[in-house]
Image 1 (cartoon, helix red, strand yellow):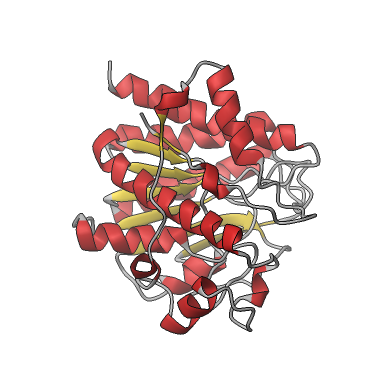
Image 2: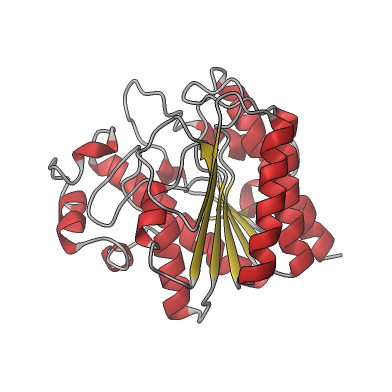
Length: 300
């Protein structure tokens, strides 16, 4: 099976705009819609301190693992408790496992992950660990996978990921995001900053044109896709105007292109803060179902 999930991603974060329970709801919907059974989810191990040190500084890892509230951890905009630490280690472990699994199955989904605001030396924007970068470094070291294409379709620019790989010719970072929104921007290899209220047609045109150009010219060995639900028009933190169907078309395009080209694909759910959490769950469910449908087509 291609789905990675851990109950340990749930933690009490208090009253917060981040609907951390969405991961459980996505898993439940996959079971209710008979896409998966209870036994069809792979349970990842927690990321280790050594995994974190592939990307993060020793000082930051010491603060995070030691639950120390310092200038390195306070920009997370979240509390820092043992359960929250475990949540991020589980989410990061899920991304590592999803990427490793995709080497076998061509597609795998971490029901979680996408912590693209974390920098080597500090947390930021609901992100304590940069699971994308950690998974890349681990696959480069242990699986001899060299060239990675990060397709970041979260509403917010993946500033941490962009910074980490700013001088790395083997990792191409592509971010398509709302320009007039958090965070302070770093330089990705390609940034498409969209105007407020941009809708389906313009978004998809920019995505398709640039994805194809990069895939043709960079020729990646692996794609990591952040399928954020927050470009949705009713997202609380967003200012774009994509519909649920537009987001589904986005996912179908990215997944189909990777399948067509034979490129292993690791999918992370990333952000999503809709006024109605059920909408966020539907968007994430659609991503998972499309991944499942394409995986099935590969195994007929």
